Amino acid sequence: MGNLKLENVSKAFGALTVLHDINLAIEDGKFVVFVGPSGCGKSTLLRIIAGLEDISAGGIEIGGRDVVQLSPAERKIAMVFQSYALYPHMSVRKNLAFGLENLRFKRSEIDARIMEAARMLAIEPYLDRKPRQLSGGQRQRVAIGRAIVRNPDIFLFDEPLSNLDAALRVQTRAEITRLHREIKTTMIYVTHDQVEAMTMADQIVVLNGGRIEQVGSPLELFDNPRNLFVAGFLGSPRMNMLKGKVAAIGEAGVTIDAGFGSPLTAEIDPASTKMGQAVLAGVRPAHFTLADKGLPFIAQYYESLGTETYVYGTLEGQTEQIIIHRTGHFAPGTGERLFITPAAGRMHVFDPETGLALPRAVEQRSVAHEHA
Image (cartoon, rainbow, N blue to C red; front, side, top):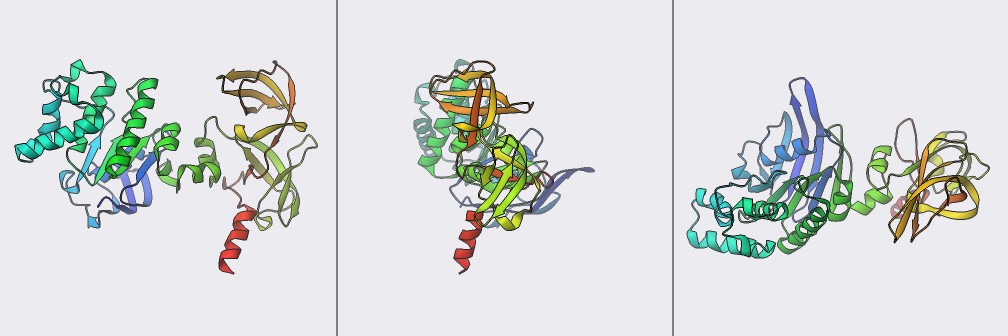
């Protein structure tokens, strides 16, 4: 079973603590992505799960077994690294077989596992080639195949697509996702690329400074980021932040004054804020709509992809960049004045002091209903 449990896991290198009290449970068969900026501790955490790094404190269970004292081989995991780490003098077939031969598997079992992995990864024609005769994408598939033949409880991927060009990244990303659906084995995947995280994961773990910021499905984190870091990290382009103050509080939410005489309505729990409180209103580029009146947006330039357009500019008289998204081709002139307003129910509100998102009124009503 490939379920994983981390309890109060910490890791220090001398006086430097790089992981702080990590608690995480991963169900068997899930595709989980660790994502965060460089230096956040995601690769260190993966190496700890693999047994390549010792923990300073805490516990680790895989399939209900305490594995803290077990070697990587005893943990029933297989790891795919950023570098392909293939033996250059061996054929693809020999690269796939090497680990099983060291474990003294029968030849018939080795051959059966190699052919099954080759079928899954469409590398049958390359079994007798050397790694130097393969493209980067083919080499990465061989590296994945070497993990598959071991039939592990958990696959660990450490930024496996970093060495591929853009087109191959997209292709290999799809192949790994398809592979997971076919073999239904737990996969933990490390990346700094939030697009990979959003498109591949059943569950995302957002790390920052050696701490878990939030855990949830891609849409949960996109629609309900718990703090400013998650809101800014997930989503491309980034979420826009508007400075404002609470101008009115009602039963259904609050009114925020962001200037320009155009109040913004947010469905925020009235008990979570107070009149005059400074807040940050977060709006994703796709959640701004054009209107006859609203916030005055001065277009500076745009990027059109034909099917969609991103327009970059500022609110009138301000310097903070604002990005809006439009479907199709849209070509405003430089300096053109547009009026924008957040789509209903699509605005997030954060406390600038704590960085935490203020709870939505609908969430509070839902909790009250459940307890009734």
